[in-house]
Structure formats: structure tokens, C-alpha cells
Length: 84
Image (cartoon, rainbow, N blue to C red):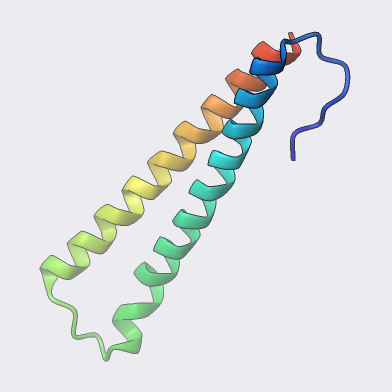
């Protein structure tokens, strides 16, 4: 969670920092769900996924991982702006 100590930033900056932290947390959860599907579902279904279904799941996982990276970057930038 975002530490609210020090920081001479404005209240709006704090709101953005908290929102960025929450977004990063949500994106991390989405990536974990995508990873669970990617690694477990083909085996649990007897390995009968089509190549298209496998590609879609890989794409979803890659998109989720990218969203996490972006959210973490925004979180860091926002926190830096607010506290600096």
C-alpha cells in the first residue's frame, strides 16, 4: 500500500498515486488469473485445446503481463511526482 508520510504533494496527486497503486494491484491479480488458466486449463481439459484457443490464452497472458508492467511504471512515476 502507498505510504502517506512526508510528501509535500497536492491532494490531487495523492489521489492519483493511490489510484495508480490500486490499478497496479488489480492488474497483478488479472495476470495471476491469466497465468492460472494458461498453465492449468489445457492439462485439466485433457489437453484438447485447439491451437487457436492456446494462442488466445497466450495472447491474453502477454497482454496481462504488459498491463502489469505499465501499471507499475505509472505507480512509480505518480508516487515520485507526489512525494517529490
